[in-house]
Amino acid sequence: MVNDAPGGSLRLQLLRWLLLPLFALLALNAYFSNRAAVATANQSFDRLLIASADAIADQVSVQDGQLSVDLPYVALQLLESNIQERVFYRVVAPDGDTVTGYADLPLPASLPGNRDEPALYSARYQGETVHLVALRKPLFGTTVTGAVVVVVAETGESRHALSRRIVLEDLSRQALLIAATGVLVWLGLQRGLRPLLRLRDSLLARPTTDLSPIAASQLQSELRPLIEAINQHMARIEHLIQSRQRFLADASHQMRTPLAEMRTQIEYSLRQQQPTLALQTLRDVHGAVDGLARLVTQMLSLARSDPSALQQRHQATDLVELVRSATLDWVPAARKKRLDLSFEEAAGAVHVPGNAVLLRELVANLLDNAVLYTPRGGTIVVRVLAGPATDQGAPTAVLEVEDNGPGIAPALREQVFQRFFRGAPEQAPGSGLGLAIVAEICASHQAQISLRDAAGGQGLCVRVSLPRLD
Image 1 (spheres, rainbow, N blue to C red):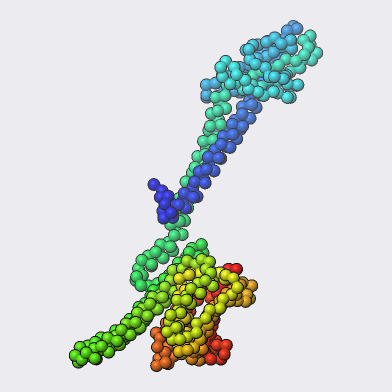
Image 2: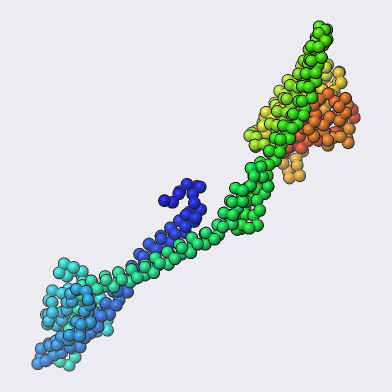
């Protein structure tokens, strides 16, 4: 049984797609072959009918003023065959009387004009269909004037037998041709699929960790686009695996140190058995736990924003409303450090395509860095603007977070987007993940990020340019 499922046998599917049209053509050809065979048989036997009628007409004469027909045996012998069929004839005088033959044999609707124009027709006679020919023979120079009509008829058994034989012979040859075609196609498929089978065997023999590209040079050109697509998919999988492995290694490295420090502090405090030291240790551990929780949160955000992961669902997002809401969340932290946190927005809504959760995470990380590094009593300004069009004429939206903190040296502005890079660790209390998360989210939203000096020359301005919908 042929498997109709999408994953069925390729050989059987190719054979079916090739042979089914061939059988359809065979059926169509059988119809036209039958018509051609019937026409050929009718033409052959019509000629015999005409020859028989001619032979009878040659034997019509006038003797002693009377019509005489000397029926030749050869006239009817022309219509003899191995098949049992019947032959009829009739000779009609000029006055319409039947001279000899079957008087009820039907005449044509219109009599032929002369002997050279016989009339061929069919009619029902004695309960069956007969094929007839009628021809006119003029009589000249006799006492009987006018023309006699000679009619010869036969039943259709021989015609039908001949047409069937022609059709069967024709279809037999075509059936043999289709069978030979099927065998040749099967052999061709066996040979043509050998490279694909070798590819299957080589893939099965690969180690489970081998995601190297598949060589397509030995395959047919029709299969190379498929292999290229598989290679691209495998490359994405390999990149995703490497990203996850790098994430686990970074997480292990970054979390091991604070956990070891907390364990050492607790063990030392337990050995000393001093209430004052224990209380101080609790304060230190509490601060370390807060820092570790922040690190875990940022690392999870980094993993979620990785552009090599599955494509995030993007939809139209009001950037003004999203940034305003995210900025309000940081008002308590800004007040705690007596920072002047303000928000400037464009006139009207600014819609961008994106994932609202990730975009909010982007704003939160920019504000976290600004609040963390801006000295007490400083200022932070958050802006959402309608940006200039790109070189291709596409509109953009701009998000800026500007502070008057220490800023970032121009030589380090490319490196700060790397994971866990913190410049001078003694002056950088963060984990080195904030801008890395921002860069990953920008990459997943086709956004551009740049670092520049603040407007007053003191501090940092982070500028993010995103595609805009309106």
